[in-house]
Image (cartoon, rainbow, N blue to C red; front, top):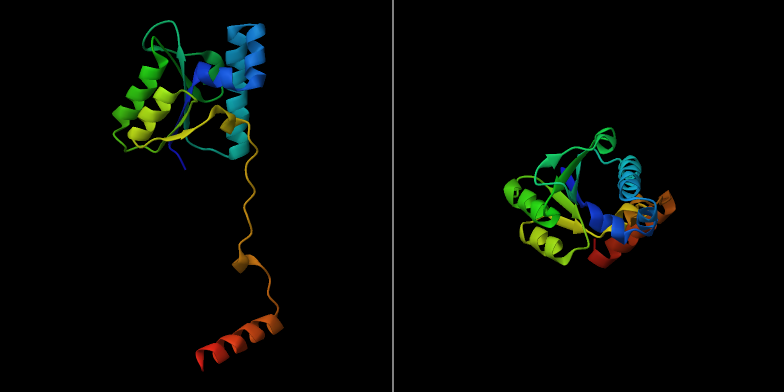
Length: 158
């Protein structure tokens, strides 16, 4: 499990059709839809770590968006969101398990180089995979156990 998930804000919005369609209304509407999507994803996935969304805009280090904060998501506005994400990864020094959600090749390649995991934005809308049943979890009746043991004793010459 990851300690921190960082989203490349506008990159995610442009890669998820439901969010992209919100841009027709307004940029703020798309950001609000992203906050709702991430909040819902967090509940579905039972993720307990920190979430951070980085957007291009306003000025380096300009923190805050009340809508995101109310959902437990840190929001950062930066002159260069890609550069800020890469710096966050570098500054972690590999001591924090980080997942970056972006389709931007520059971001993805830098994050991988600094040992962060990377997922495509559609990761947020995919259904969680069902856990596959392994063979040792299947019920085996007493007769089957005896038959297997007998065959093994014969094969091993016991």
